[in-house]
Image (tube, rainbow, N blue to C red; front, side, top):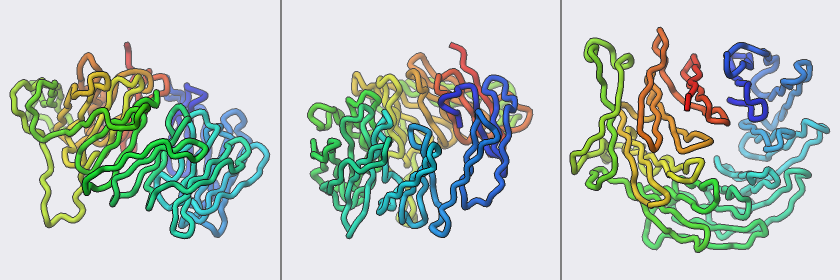
Length: 401
């Protein structure tokens, strides 16, 4: 991961060691060694290598931890979500938060780092508690109109938050920090619940991905859908469809992982998108919108479908229509937007990095003598380079404008 303040550093873990490298040269600047077991947290200082902190939950156990936005506190979650502990690295104080709901998205920080919204479960009911991140004092506690909340997310401007129901009920509600319900949006028919939720950085739009492969976009004025995107397995419109193809004189002679790739624009209509067909014998079939994320400048919305794992859909927010579909040879493993502009990168578990921008698409092969399979990606905060992460290797890709 990249350290957000010292933009020239990069950290990676190797067995019991944490290695700090210079981003531009990948030279090792510091190495920290973990001396305790896996049940504890160890914290080091980049400015003072002699400073070390150990955090241990004791018999309560430890299943998760995360930094607070001010980087002065660490939050650890005990086993069975019994409690959340806030550890201060400044004055060594400890604060406890009881009854956190046992779900993945049970908390959300405001973008300015001033507030924390936490979903709690008490007496078979859901509650929301707002904390001040400076003092960890309780500011507001209220009961949302939810039967079984599945997640909570602050709007980027910090003026409100959204809470949505679990799989069996399609409902999302907007609340102010005072606990006032601003708006509620629910489906009229018997749909499954909401699968993914994403704010645009301006807080003007909220994208809701469903289990029926539909994406609803709500605006911040009336909190009603102003657009509905429904990716289809058959394309009949004039949107740009770019399909990855193997090419080169060695095609067929080289292995698939070493073959060169390029994108071909397909003009034939109608065009069928590769999709996984539902079978009654498969009880673990994945379906629905797996990802819906706005670009940094709010111009585009990227979506992925579980039943179409090789395809990436890019929509124009201004025109509220489909712009481009990227169809890969292999299933897409990871996609992320450039943090500074309308540009995204993706990987498919091969040795190639794929990139899309409004100017077009390209595929770049990692120059490595050994097969390098890219499993995930991470942008530098400035957007100048991308970290390519494999199973036991990593590589930096520098992008020239």
